[in-house]
Image (cartoon, rainbow over all chains, first blue to last red; front, side):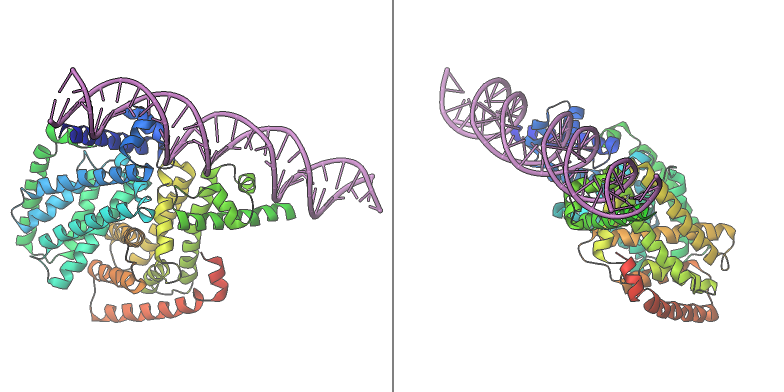
Length: 225
Length: 225
DNA sequence: TCAATAGAATTACCAGTAGTCAGTTTTTAT
DNA sequence: ATAAAAACTGACTACTGGTAATTCTATTGA
């Protein structure tokens, strides 16, 4: 349907504009009129496509989560070994085009919508489940069942923690710093001998190269923030 | 001055009420009138004591940080060994009276104020520095300088991550679960033999007992949330 | 003791802000 | 071509943050 498509295009434009407004003004001061102004339409249009501000923010939240998760999926597709899968998750989460202060600030702002917005809670729950499942699948080749479970949770929270830090702190966290932080954690959590460390480094380099090509591509960037 | 003291009492009451409002309605819907109603006064009074909403939220943010940090300080006072200091930090951060879903939800909500509120940024920076310093001081007996640095950051982000999870997730995170998560991390990060594990368990028990007495006391609770 | 005064609280008010609704234009399907 | 449906507009309401003028209350100093 064309009508349906127009609607979904508008909704996409508007949630992008709303994200922009949150970046610029923060959640509390991102008004519907500012969102409209950024999108080049009147406030009324915003409310024509979203029943209220909460549902607009839900769309923004959903969108930013999917931008991130799509980059994970994209890299995951090219990962052939458990090490590569692990690195795909990490590199995708901290790739330069995505992991920057502005985006992290907006992410932190949007977090605050979750506790009192049931839809956001569902999105967040689904997202968390997916990341955990990805991590478990990558980790289970190295660890027993309970350790896999704990380590997946641990690494997941570390990813969130680094994102939060980058949003809260005045000095930005560099992409390389974040990745090296994750690497340090992995080395501590996973059993390792010389051979596995070599595999691990090799996997990292491979995924980094793929990331530069795939996530750095023009086609990908325009889907991004 | 009595007048000054009245003012500071009012400010404390009002920021407590504002915290309550954020718990009940979320940041976006915690209006000044609701804050006033909770405190049993009119909206005007709120603005008489705080120049605007941002500075009210700053006070709320400052207050919730200090409630938490005071419990750390309180336990820290009773810690005599590095292990005990480490446990003091962990137990204080996840003690039952403080670490519950409502408080964590409010904490997550308040986070979103940070990126666009310079004062909150300063409070958050100071807070982060303090926690890092506590952690470093506890860890430096087990690790070399660079490992101390990394591990302190790592554990700090893990604490934040668990708090965030408890605020975002619909099912609450239990205090014991959070603490056992931290314990697992510590066991992975710190070098350990049988003797150190024994010390470590002993330290944990001691601090837990002290926490039940000190943080569980009536005098302490009324200072709390 | 009691006027002066500073600060606490209330009130009326203003400029936005979310959200509704009735009505108009544009698009789509037949 | 035209009827139906969807996109859009603008005016309106109720509420919110913030200001300012006003009233109330308590201390203080002569």
